[in-house]
Length: 144
Image 1 (cartoon, rainbow, N blue to C red):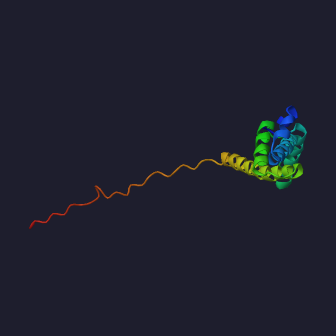
Image 2 (cartoon, rainbow, N blue to C red; image 1 turned 120 degrees about the vertical axis):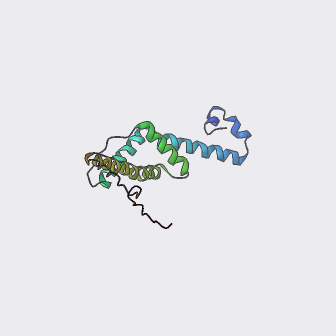
Image 3 (cartoon, helix red, strand yellow; image 1 turned 180 degrees about the horizontal axis):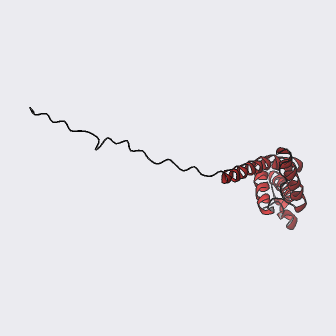
């Protein structure tokens, strides 16, 4: 039974073993934490933290826009599943600490790419003939 199943069928709690009851309660708490984590209000809070984190990490050089909400929700869900037992504030901080360096890395990569576009490509030099074929002189030995 999932964490919210006991709300629909409360009599099932009375039939469950004590350890099952605590599993149900724990799942319900975790599910409410997950729903709080991926709520629009909390995602906006994480977005602001990411924007500020990138701004600070690049010494004010970049002021980025909000990230795609669906991609952010996937990243937050992954972080939530990999780090059970953290509260909402710790999960938010962890999300920001893990996402900001990746965005900064992508920004640096993009800048490097744009810089390399401005530099003209140097063509390779033409090949040099290093073969000695045709340059040997055949000597004549009359006694052989």
